[in-house]
Image (cartoon, rainbow, N blue to C red; front, top):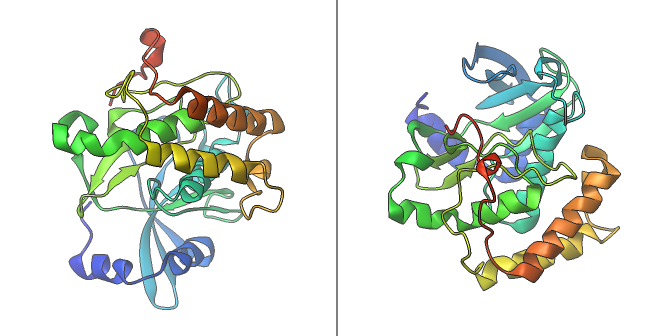
Length: 251
């Protein structure tokens, strides 16, 4: 899907707070269902005060049960990933909210970022892949169990975007990713500084993002803090340990 240029311009002029407010309180109209994936995912239009946004709606009702993730929690994990991206100030995950009410009930709503769906991780140039270090660290932090190549996209402005984080934040090691380009390399100091700030924020009871406690379980939150501390102490990107380190399918 390619957005109209006037729509793109309009979106670029909106502040992040306005976008989040529109996603959270605008009227949702389902346009189509995405054909790929096992869960129900819908392309929608959201309207409020004369402004229309294109967004992706993932109702909890449409989640396929998984043996290792609590049923009905994937939408909350999508939002939790966005909050971590915001805490890190890396702008990796498109604006995301949780809505109690939607056409199919409770679910996550994420702004649709205009990208070329055929241009993803497996078609990136080496120069483009150099932009992916923050994303590789991000996946370590959230324990992403399903980082497919098609979940790493390039915006029309060259911005790297990361989508589909419903299978994340498990308390047990679950990392499955295609993004092993930086194995054994040192994590840049600037990223480690951001991780230290994140770790401090996660331990601060007055943090504005303590709603994370309501999105994942107490044991998962504890594991998140431990993973972040371990990554800081290690200071380098890990290497894959087995074929289970990769998702399937890869795209």
